[in-house]
Image 1 (cartoon, helix red, strand yellow):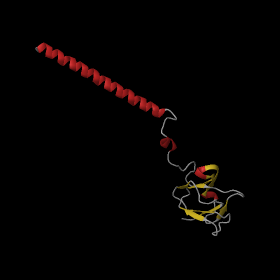
Image 2: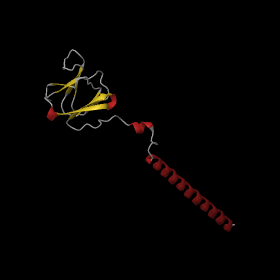
Image 3: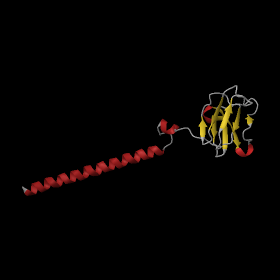
Length: 147
């Protein structure tokens, strides 16, 4: 009877070891497949692929203005070294912008008017890395202010 009991225990141990190895192997294969899927372009989820809006290609010290919303279209870039502080800077004739990034470190006011007139819409944005994907009006001019 003792021999049968030992044989039954041995068979159970062998079966348990096989199940454990099979479970480990299938877990490893599933994890590997998941990791490889993440590396293949186009298999990421839509939310991950879209990501949050970014500042785009606008360096520190610059004011970047785009012709279209969501930082698309023609980009106009201005740097502090080439701007007159507290003065109206009009965009080129027949040009307006819909989105902007202010990384000048200074407040910037955008104007609907090409002469920076306050009779139209205007808004001031702080200079600490502000991005605006959609302006509520066509921007035709701006002023960079002393802090």
